[in-house]
Image (cartoon, rainbow, N blue to C red; front, side, top):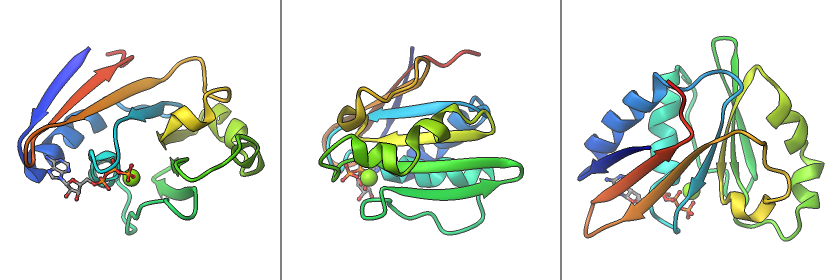
Length: 142
Ligand SMILES: Nc1ncnc2c1ncn2[C@@H]1O[C@H](COP(=O)(O)OP(=O)(O)OP(=O)(O)O)[C@@H](O)[C@H]1O
Ligand SMILES: [Mg+2]
């Protein structure tokens, strides 16, 4: 397990850079954190580091936003608002997770717990005072 303490948005960008070097095609990242902890903020920096050139926004209302970096597809999901796991089935979550050419990043995976892949990278974010955030990373093979 890797622990990274961030005291600022700049620190979180640095952490995204470190993380980006460990992410491979086929990986799925699951975020476990409260609202406003920094899942989307970290994802934005991570996607920039992975080479996404288009603007990265929160998929709160779209459920999934899809990006391309070179020959890698990157899917960013937010399942906070879904009421039933069937909504995730309908957008093709299973196929996207099984696609070895894509990286999948999932906010609120608790709401789709029966569709999760067997192997994943788990990032837990703990919100501290002010801008302090603690990132715990599990399941990263180096
Ligand atoms: N060190 C830090 N790292 C990341 N974000 C920080 C940090 N300090 C302050 N913030 C702020 O915390 C907020 C995080 O919001 P963000 O939308 O990323 O949260 P989220 O976990 O995706 O929430 P939600 O569950 O609502 O989608 C942003 O306003 C960001 O600027
Ligand atoms: Mg978010």
